[in-house]
Image (cartoon, rainbow, N blue to C red; front, top):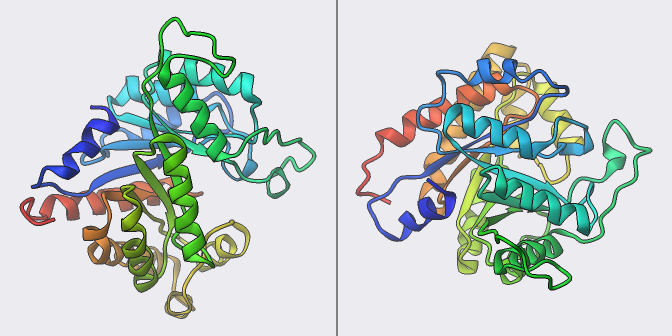
Length: 307
């Protein structure tokens, strides 16, 4: 079922939160390892979110990988498209190829700066930003290209964006979300992972006025050092002082369980403000799958008559 159809269920209670699992393409052509990691562990997962060389680190191209995931598991992929690596010609061609391969939903991203990746001498394209990419998607959905040539077979993408509840200026972030919605009929937003329940609730409450359903990002860590590194080096992620204090001195096994439980607490505390949850896998995909399984169990336990 396409993402746009699932999101339309939000207007017809009863319903439950949807669940999206981030899957990073491999760094190479060996994909069986990814398949094996996912096999038999996807009950309750509504969508995959397939990243596009996130953090400017080269990986197998997102679009064919997403199509292979859909063929293998029958789960709808949400595919990230970055402006960093494509000019407008390549962008349109890739979007048409994605549609031809059965991809129906794309997330428009400006893209991480190449300077934060492992190939800092590469050149970023950035011919447009995410708002410009949304205009490209809207144009293809209308049946023409950017030169106003009629397409022989148009697209009908369900476009999404990203949003950051951790923004230093929440009002400005909500304004950007509204601008994105106006640019391309945005149907959903995936958020950065959050580590502060009250701050997340405050942001989500304020963002409701924009009318874009949000999948709240959740991320678990194995090591305290990994959590600190992400907070320091990954744009848009902050960890609250309370969480920093709670993880200090914990053994790794205990730390993983702490984050799994903490993510469930955030889910329970925000579920009436979101359309679902987006499990960010990061560098620990096995832990991401474990978190997704915990969330799936939590969601299945909810009374579907209560939103």
